[in-house]
Image (cartoon, rainbow, N blue to C red):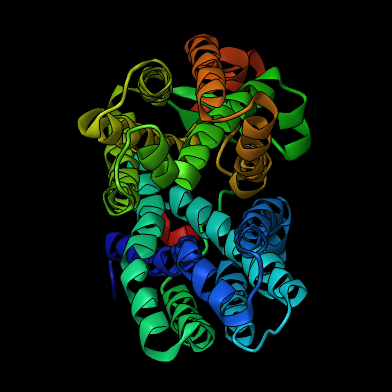
Length: 415
């Protein structure tokens, strides 16, 4: 019989496989131009599909926790994997933008977001003593899936054409998510309160969390992080060409650079947050982001400055979105992690669409970078001042029972 430690690490392996399959949706940019060439659609209209995907992904996290409560993690991941795979496979048959928006946008995004937040939150519950590291591994796998499938999907598009590439992409992703789900087990947190650094930590419901000012302050920080990172990722090649004077081929290398540093930041800063504190990591990353966008705003860019700046922003973005699930667990408990993080995660969806609108309103890249610098500094101040609700101190009525409160062992948590 496997030991509880063996079981926990099998769940890590299963979650990594699931997350790598889910992360492949970030290869969407590979399909834009081939779809334009195939159907004659407008490029911006095709690219808008991924904005729909991102929004559907974020919104689906609001209901994912409730579905997990009803179905269980394994059944939910299996269902999401099938829907995701079928959505991509059927996209190979579309002949109109509206169908592309529904299938590759709404359906694929919703399935991806449902599986993403529940598998991530479930894994964090299994490792309450190493939330930052485990979050880094899970979210890092999501980024790695994107990096690897840039080559796989690119090869499919070249060899079988863009429409048939959807079919093979969907088939592989469905096998990965459904297959990985068989290694995943439910982590159950039965107590209303749990121990955090020697003091009692309340497990907040969504309603209770929304009554705290800390929830809204964390949302502001997360929104700032997501807007800065996602805006840069969407325009990095254009920055290289228009602001640094690079040729298209050289500037395109920044896309791979962003993916590498984004993934590295997830693993490194996630692990670091367990040692030095999560809000310290977030504060430091936001300071670096503010410095990098200030360079992009005021300094005449050359090859080195351009790549250093975008690498720094990508590294910090990847790290911050990794640390945030653990921060939400630290502040509001593990029991309702999927639901609570689903609320804060809306900063991702809003951040994904805000950058472009702000850039259009302000008149270009540089004014937007300046605004991001200001928001980053404001978020640093918030991160330095914010505290766990109630300061994490045990209440008098709980003191006599505090010694009895503990996390469930992995054996009793498994379903």
